Length: 207
Image 1 (tube, rainbow, N blue to C red):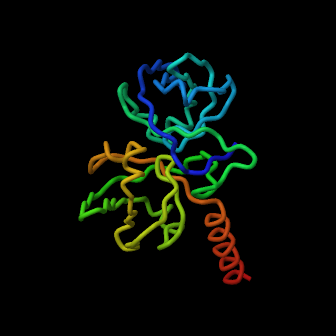
Image 2 (cartoon, rainbow, N blue to C red):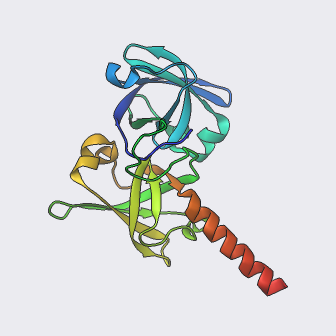
């Protein structure tokens, strides 16, 4: 399944059932969001593609496996947390952002939040492994939100993103503070291009 990175709204984690190497989470949602959803459907939750296991009028239940708990923010998720939600893309849907798979790579940390007039700027710190994919005007997904990268600081492994008021209204970013972690997915074409170039350079050096 794929998503567009245009978050439809937010849900609230109402219950977490922790088991060995598995967590089941129940998310309060609106009946409008749930309309037409079936067990087995894919939903992007904070950027993570999850499969619906149970449906109620105002909630959805998902299982989160150990690898997802390890790589994403779901390892530290708590009840009452606000999460971004988006239903999977259907054939013919408009792509307002960029194609997102829901396969989160890692997390990044909020280092600074700047709020000049009519703007909301996040500065985020990533690990050196991801830095090779981060460049100005590149596409990424943060908690399932399709965003364009602003400035990049390769020395300190940081980058900025700019958010418009509508994004703040529809998503959970407004609830985040400095020090919080956010899920990141690198756009597939960017990843493939960078990996191919690096592999070609490696072969030319050793060849």
